[in-house]
Length: 141
Image (cartoon, rainbow, N blue to C red):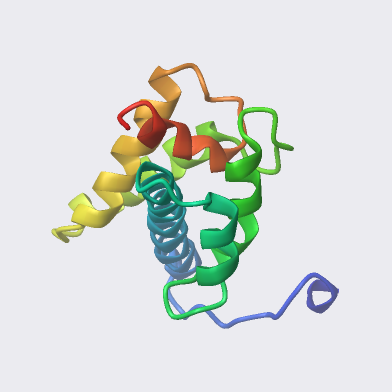
């Protein structure tokens, strides 16, 4: 039954291994999403057409699934369709940071991404699509 939803992966034998897999995934998602917003905002600051930059880099070495998926919504702005809210990444990046701390692991990239999601939340964007983390870079531009 689960195979219809995706690939079943053996996460390990210990209780909690599956949660650890999820934490690793959410670290990557948080960092890639914040980096995608930073990159597209940087393109705008450089006076480049953000849509052209997106089209150019999304499939290249600097691309990521998060950029390819969220980039178009980043460029749509605050009215973009909501597929996952900023509040989810505030929670998830916070959980990843807690797990890292509890295991004595220095995770500066997820902490930087977490700061961006928290900044977006502080700006009142918790219910907006998570792609709108880009707004935190635009306000600094």
